Image (tube, rainbow over the protein chains, first blue to last red):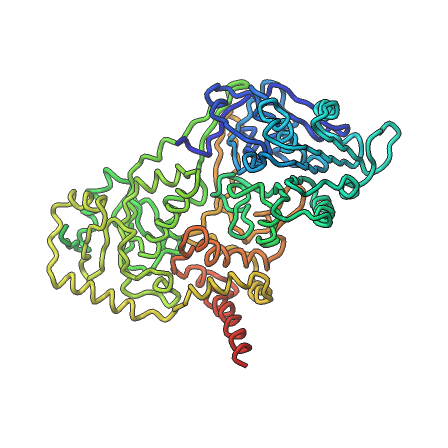
Length: 279
Length: 352
């Protein structure tokens, strides 16, 4: 087995600025070695440790779906040194990738069930991957109804507009977009995610809810789900935590005896309730 | 293989025959403390010591080490892997607790889907020459964590200090091969072996610090939210001596270190500690363990609760370094006592 700390090298193929304030970009990466891309066998919900060699490395969820062949994508918010260096990179620059890491969304277990995707803000990247995967012709028949509830503070913050518009045109997915406050040109819903969840009231029958977003959004949305009969086992979250190695060695992403990097990042609410509140 | 004898006067010969093939690490005096360093002269070996301040862990898992090197050629980045991992090492004079820590480290770094190649290769190429403890320190408690002052299992060659000579035993195949190179070692007599056993018995009887860690683990599992953690963490100043000097602590940070003038650099890892608030601090400002109480609890839980759950053994070898190192005397024996008091108090309530 190769040394797991050595990154595979990729090149930036395209850069998309995702929001109005331009602090979120999606980098599309092409592997320098074809065989390494072939070996990069991932499922939605997994992450990778990506780096600008010489600046540093950080864990980022994979935004592309394995069904989008040829490249992988990462959506990165400009926060600190490393994420800023990604924002400063140009087409053709070298980026190191270690992965895929983490458990990812349980695509096998989800088969045959209705899927309710609830996302808020920029934590939508692995949800993009998940929905694209399910909507792919090869997989669509394996899953039941899909509902996507995606909320943002304002319309300028909505990520992945191109794919969202495509989803809205389809009749095999129910897309509900919302923003916190009214805006003139906005024709979709207005209100917090929890309020929209209450209004949409997704049925818990043979269904799994997959939630990503800021902690307050997760808490309030979960409250609404629980009120209408959802069980903790059927509500899935993906956690974020500071990490260095991503492979269960550097220590810091533990929550009790679990490591977010290798035991997660996806945990059910039932699992989270058994873990100490240190995340 | 039969036991051998090594005269202390022959340590120089022992060293000079092995140093050509092996990088030879031994206990030596550094600024008034004992440390395991690569030596270049047998005179540097310190034979009269209880244990080193920094555990010999740092020979295989140094405080700072290169993961890989890189250089830039225009927009290209070229990664250069380490080539020194195949070097053969001898670590001489390792106490049984520290030898056992190498086993824990090896099991940890090999666990799961990803193996830590850097550590494991070095471990594979290292021969551990252990030595029994004739007079354990007052802070030692290896017998409470499944160890023993003369435990030989995790060593390749084991020495017993008989006064002017060492009884030398090959424990592993690696150890046997090493001793085959030293054909001049005299055969030990039955009396020498008996003397070593007697020393082991005396050493074991001298222990004053003893814990029932099965009970500790049980109490910890049930008392994550107990107010005792407030009491335990109160005097801690977060200096992290306990974790930096611990032979089983493995946490590390990773950074890129650049040599800008030469268009190259290296990615390194550096020991890190769960006792630092920066350890878990996220870029957003969110911190899952922002307070001392959570960080002190994490260390104790990791060693005595999470480790047993994940790896079926304690994450402690009983060396007592965290006991002697704590500058505010908030040491492990007192912490364990406080934890066990929870059980005693709840027992009283039940009987009343």
